[in-house]
Length: 136
Image 1 (spheres, helix red, strand yellow):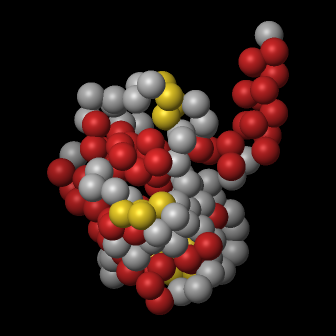
Image 2 (cartoon, rainbow, N blue to C red; image 1 turned 60 degrees about the vertical axis):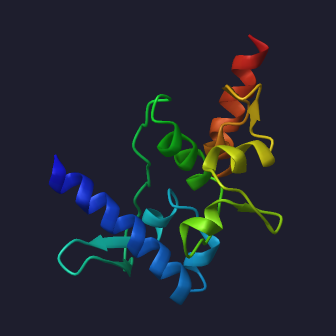
């Protein structure tokens, strides 16, 4: 389990590094990166995909793990950060916590309920299903 967590940590920090050196990567969210890059576990770096397609995902984080929970929400929205401070910055304002950054973006209501499913930005199909569910 520790090896898996370490690998995910390497992937995250390598993504931040990639964003600082690759203009195209800067246009992607963390969950979108796998559609265009593959992870090289041996060299601990992202490489441009030569062929094929892969869906990116961010592991589920329980609400009790507040810092990680709000960070995961932002990773589905923020494009091209080069450090964790970039993830906590919105409209040139820096927020001390990921939760404050979420609140600034108006993606939380009452400090508890997520109003916007961030994956809907990347996939219109999910948005359509979500709207249908609201109508039912």
